[in-house]
Image (tube, rainbow, N blue to C red):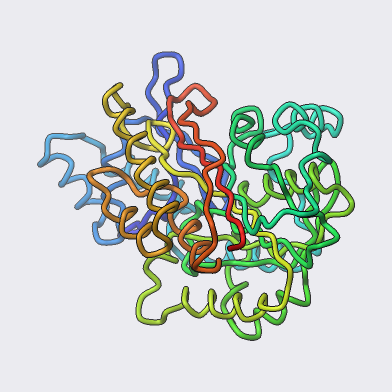
Length: 395
């Protein structure tokens, strides 16, 4: 391309055998991860659709950053285009074909079995038993629990938060539906995305409430427009595994909802308001449990941020606590104001998801902190995550 435009892809720093690399990951899962020399990061920054290859080379030279031959830049651009990493007609054709294929499949098969958790059922059940022991004893027929907020980390990391949070759950026979409201880490255009697929896991399946979702789509026409985002959404997948662990074959139907950051800035169209209003209206006479997969701080190189000092880590924990206090004491607007007042820190990962939940729950619902842990994430690249466990009870 004469003026190549790199798509919104995730960038992860990686050191391998004393070599510094930059790994590009496609959040839609259309393209395999690509690793390139970390020194090429300034080239990627200039692939914005505004600069020609010659201008990119000239800009790098003037800044004294890199001297990359023009033919090498052209080869890199051609390689990105062929893979589908550029925002061009080739990528759009790939996206349409993949989206239509996903829409036509009745089942959403697990994408992270064998990656984030074991694909072998016996091993998975053993891991879940360690994270949240005795699932049947977690059900309380007399509970007034409306919602539970859990982390979407691998179960061996999140167990310390999952265990106290997944307690006092309603009996499945008392529920009409479970709304799975999960954080979407992809760069989508619509604030919320649902799907009506059957969700498969190594230990069972969860049916979506297809009739409800059809009614929701009649009111909110765009709600399945980017349904492909569900194909690689690990937050919903982990939620379904948790539901299978706790409820098994008795699990009520689910309404799987991905919540993206654009829910915080839907613009003049008020798309977020439209969705929340439709969801509230359709759920009005139903017995509902909200299972929310959301986290607070995501920091460190594992999330594309600089390394943190001990003082910075302590400040991040304090920031998480401010957000928790806003939830416990305020409600949706106070939480959002606190979250957007970043104080120089990045926006909490689950801001849009938690805000959506607070808007949907009764204003006088009682919030209770079940657990919080600020923990290192797995892998060779350092990073920290603020894992949150919350309960909301009927007034």
